[in-house]
Image (cartoon, rainbow, N blue to C red; front, side):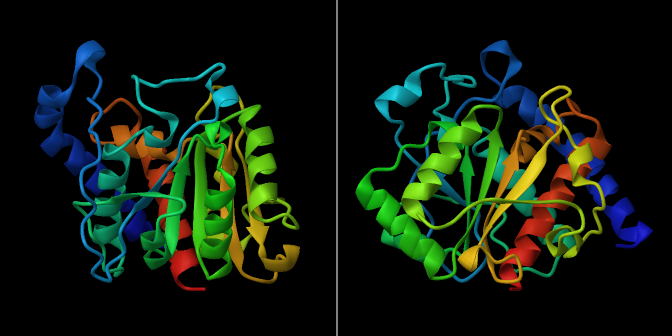
Length: 262
């Protein structure tokens, strides 16, 4: 990716901060943090790329140690500002036809999910699908769906692996790094592990492939010990350095371009 494109991303991030800061100050609730917005009716599918967030219920045992995050359920962390900011940047920097003002929130067993080739799940450490949901999600992935698992750390990984074994019993996560084509699909990212979200814990990236074959279609990617959407959510407030937010946008854009072009 050329220096020009990198500068465009930097300028856009600064522009968003300058335009949105006053409005953000008005929207914040107690503690200076954004209020949670309960999802309304999903917009009608119209063929444009639309950010599809997966909504799930926590199992009883998943409530232990619940990191509520401003009182939000785990699936809604960084909602809706994370996806709103991300899709605006996506629309500015790529030629993907993007719905940049609206997103959808869908249960795993909602038939509408099959219309959206890329989906996103936050905090999969709390995800406990029932048999119907696991079966429907399996169908989604086998029919060409791609899922991004984000915003989780440490022992959450154990649950994600266990639940995906229920969805795709034969599948196993394979660790990937900056040499994988997904990190060179739009921006060239040689060291995606340098973007950290949880102190000194270095992130790692794990993927699921058809037939466990890295030469075949990737069906899922997991940002282990990382939180891309946290950077997206706050990118227009100045809370995080611009270069960190830009790296999170670059990784997300790479995911989309890779998933939609293969």
